[in-house]
Each structure stands twice: as C-alpha cells, then as structure tokens.
Length: 115
Image 1 (cartoon, helix red, strand yellow):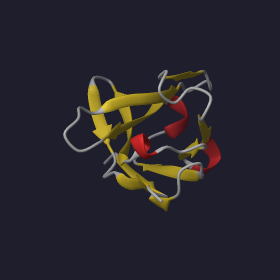
Image 2 (cartoon, helix red, strand yellow):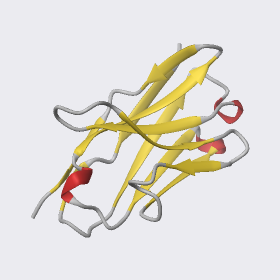
Image 3 (cartoon, rainbow, N blue to C red):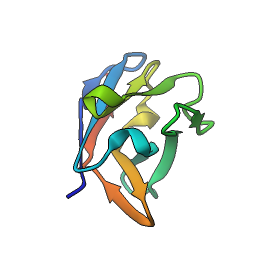
Image 4 (cartoon, rainbow, N blue to C red):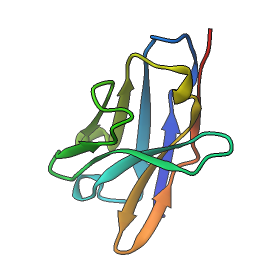
C-alpha cells in the first residue's frame, strides 16, 4: 500500500534551517506530484509547496524564497529545505500525494522554531 514517511523535524532557533524528508513506498514515485503541508495548533492545514513529477515547483507566499522543495526519484524521496525559519513556522509538517483521486498523507513531523 502507499506509505509516506516524513522525518527531519525538530527544535531550531529563529533564523535557523532544517531539511525535512518524505520517503515514499508502494508507488512509482516518479509518476506523481508531491506536496508539503503544515498545520499549526488551532489553524487549518496549509499547503506550502508542491513539485510535479517533472520537477515543476510552486510555493505559498508565506514560504516563497525561504523554503525549497526537491525530489530524488532514485531514492523515492522528496525534501523540504527550510531556511530563515521563524516562530510562525512552528507546526506539524506533512507530505502528501494524490493518486487517481485518493489522497495519501505521511504521519507528520513536528517543527518548532523557538529561542
């Protein structure tokens, strides 16, 4: 079955960086787009960025210029490089892929930005 596993979260100081990974299994990863979302306490889940199967990327204004999505199809893994982190970036981060109308989510990884 399709599984996505997000990892790489943690505690970082404002201005710091983290790289999240999303490992996929059970799918031909190279065929599908992959997205990163986040959800902060008391807020709705927010789409941050997406990368298509051909590598085209898009970003929410809130992370444009600070976050970079990438993928390594040979490793069935997508990445989210997060720079210049702010306290407002504190949230649980999820990876997602949609396959023929079904939406699959990873378990989420906590990112906390605090001094």
